[in-house]
Image (cartoon, rainbow, N blue to C red; front, side):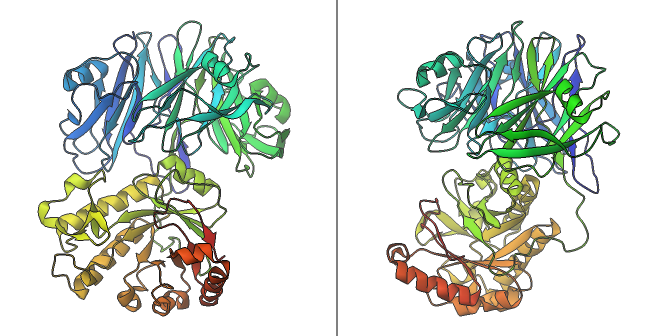
Length: 613
């Protein structure tokens, strides 16, 4: 494992060349789940690499295997790796997994492990007895899209795995588009009968899609948009005539790094995909060779237009004609000012028969500056707050406040690419038993149940263990790329916590959280804790408040506005939903105070949303 530091943004792609000359892409990892552990009916052997990226030891790593029907394979929650030293990495293969869980299986299995700070997983298949193909990269319910489904008449056969990663059964529908953006069949068609059990998968061949949409084989690759009522993931396996199976459902938005040059026998194809409902015009880009020198002329028109839902291939020769130049070695294609709806798929055609995907790789961020350059949102900042259900990414706002644990990195990157800052929510003052790190708390850390939240208990914020766990949560926020954090339940000292907490205890803990966030270059919001605002306003970058208008407490938030910092307020009264005039009066008062007020459902599930801005 190589750790790289730089002063600006960078990306890292690893190309693995086999003895026979096959070149695959291996530098893409997951955190808590892999989807493609081949069964004992396959001649392909799966390996999962468990990697400790931190400077601290990781204890026993536990996980559960699920078969294609969502059934637990063998024993659930079994220890897979006893421990990992700092920076240590170990392989566990299919045969090892079977021994550990006590059962074999057929078909592809899913592995879920407890979310551990700094743990990464690489899911590789060993093929032809000589090389590895990476199956760690795929799309999820954030995009809800299969970007490359081959027709049933193609020599290359697509099997899309729609994996229900939720804890409840789901029903899935889809809308299918051909390469020119025409809808094939009816919209929102059921993709199966019945429901797909929790942790189970639906495997869709092109023949099954043709039947679901009542259409004939289409020409060229198609795009499938999938809808469900909870989280899911989408992996497409492409089988070549010779039996090679590669992973194709992973896309980029603004750059691809593996446009093979004219000294290579492999042909590069870049698929430009419009996921939106309006035509994209004059898509421009620049190509760079491996030395960073512009190939041909910069800022050339790559596509004069791209219809809604349409997709177009540009191969190496087409790109060469556009830029009026040739190159050797790998080149980068960078789209200038990429539209939000644009996606790029970077494939290499090898052996004149199959495609390998080079759209997936790791991303580096600059070494943190010693200056205080974290985000400080000003008054009247627009925002969206959603902590449950699939996040609605369609709002044009300055801030998205979403759950730290439940939000994948792909969602965070998508929101940031749209121009939003991402604030990641976690509870700093309460215990939630369903969180992946809940086993790290000791019994003495836990106090009384929170009023109105029977599944939460107050934490002893004086505990060194509690404080250490919160530091790890902020590490996770930094690793996921969050712009800031919203630590909740920061006022245990005025509640019936079960502990003798003082105002000084609360100030100490809240300042520890603020300093920890800033040391990671994260913005941090003060959640409620109204009575200590004047003492904490200099430590925190914004306020997140609930119901100050309902409880006539808004005057207490004025210090944040005076300091040039946003007050992000949410109100829940039904009258604000039902009575427009009452809501208008609320918004008038909010605007006079320069607050950023939303009227939201108490569950924060985006059932409805009214913004005063």
